[in-house]
Length: 621
Image 1 (tube, rainbow, N blue to C red):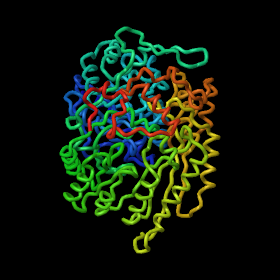
Image 2: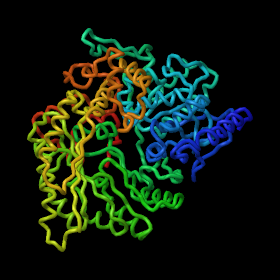
Image 3: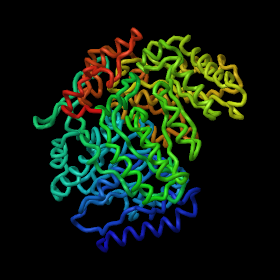
Image 4: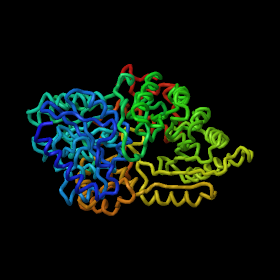
């Protein structure tokens, strides 16, 4: 580390120790130095990359993508990736009062001193946190206002498939899987040190997967809809194609993930089995934007699990993918881990489908630790499950429930959605009916087969239309309609052993606005931040009225984005982003939804969605 940087970092660290740590609820969020965290000597040749997660430490440190990119970048010579998280409200207050700049956990370097600041955007309601982190980092909000000495501000993650609402704040967005592309970006910045910002951005736009919004013009019709999004220069691609990793066995994966000092949300080793999904649920953005399906070899999975356990001491491994049990050797992985580690290591699975659930896998898991079981029927009626292409029948649900209760589980969690396209009130009533039928499977058992207590926990989210899905043209329910439907559900619930929880409709409506929005929303986000909006995804911080004030001050009608059904020929804000799925396919799927018709999953029959043509040879299972 050169003397100037070292002195600055030491000064920040001292101020953090003296002014911040004693005045916050959880100082462990801000101290760094965890097991397996990385330090490198700071030299002039080094490209310094700040991985910025716009939420608290406990959430960010649970994110697999952070761990993967931290590992991928730090494995490179002359690239140093450090971590930066959004300070919670208590720390935020102290940092603003004491003028402590936002800093990295590895070296306590101020955010503005990095070459690149890379945000991951997992959720639309983190956008005010992005602005707050830039403010704390003494970096201007708007890309056009940043000088040559400022770091490049980039972002990746699922929200970048429609980055238009925040386009004004970022120099570039990355679309797709970043293990290779972020290294290419760092090498480019390394090669172009000393050149102007504009030249660097033009060069970034030539790297596949990178979208530089300042190099595109947006024009509008008189009715407020988009006329066109066009490149300003001939060498800028008209459509930005996402990047994928073709061979996951060769992709970097963290064999020494960082072990936090404090408990995080998912405090365990996380093993990715595959990417993509074969199912084609029409509401699920991840199922479309992460195509094609690619799996790791069984040997790779086991080897990575062994290395993570050895380097961390974790006693639990979570198998993470969009539909975990679709991984062909899933049962073998579970059995192998349990056989190898006995009672020392347990295995956890995320939310599960009820048509491919394996009670044998579940019984194997509970040999070590009986983890909770969560299933996602998504809709209560057979008709609505066909509308969303869930591919699960009532018999699947009841059979699985009975098997689970018989195997000794007394608590089941069921996830549903309300406000789906083409939904009727009777479909909602069927959620309550289905929950009662699930509970009845417990009481149908002989008394000696039942666990001592039983609960069916029902959670019902408000549907949010998402870009690049068959429902991207749908109008989201209004807040009043969501409220009416929630009350209908509560009126239908009768059994004491069934608990019912619904999501905040105000938050879901705002999520819909920013999921479907365009560049005119940037001013709304800025005004909301100025009004005090931060940590909007947290109930204790979310303030709907402040957001409504921001919309009013900006002269923007949120209903234009969320509550208006769009015609198929309308230019959508994200049409210049190519995730590999054809628009014609999405239209056809929406029409099938209207008729409540299923589409076979990818393992049964190729639906010709366009992925095979976009990524030739990569769509394999």
